[in-house]
Length: 302
Image (cartoon, rainbow, N blue to C red):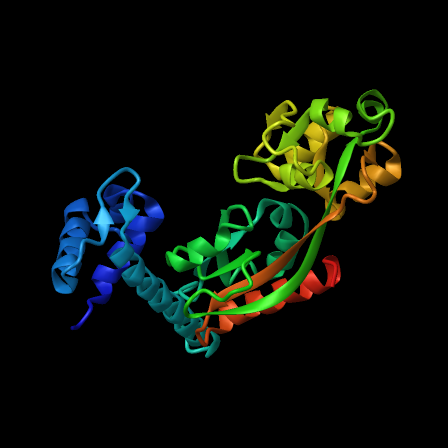
């Protein structure tokens, strides 16, 4: 079975852009052309590849084709970059490529962006932010080519490298510590003190509570604030909305200044991070991997 590259590009663009109309604008064709290419690809494979919702959703069979489409795009980008580098001329900037990668919010807010910044120019990044326990699913779906993840088991077709540990500790604004925890993190205090949680995928705070209050699952229900932004999460804790699990990379300056204090010095939780990427001979992807792993060695606990 021969797969048409134009049809694969249409599939990739539809998933990236969310609608057939937006994919058409990205590829400078009509929505009808996108629809025809997708239909032809579905006929050629004998599979339904997309659910035509808004945004479109890729099916299980579509994920297989999407991975292929993204791999072709990655290798094509590397080839064009080599052609740009040979000094023979040609359209300016044709070697610029976009790399979709998945990163958890705390890594993105602390050490990943400085690692990626020197690579900007020949590479544009499409960063998908998700909980570190869920980023690997974006690799499986073909949505991204690499991910920072807690999953140590390699996704099919991917390699995995251990990055290091992000250490989280329960911290609270200094004045709230005196109000909520006058006797330390007692069972009574932890059951009543408000807590800041990133989103409904974030289990760190309740993981700490389960370890500190064994046997109380379902009974210790402190008030919860949901703040789905890493920078705003820090601000919320700093302003006294509640206590929260913050990585040392974020909380250290405020602890030194005395505005945040550690609720429980024995309550640290270590989150082991890994880098997973597609097994492709891609110079651009390898440069990103080298930059991320080097930054992880500098900033994470090894």
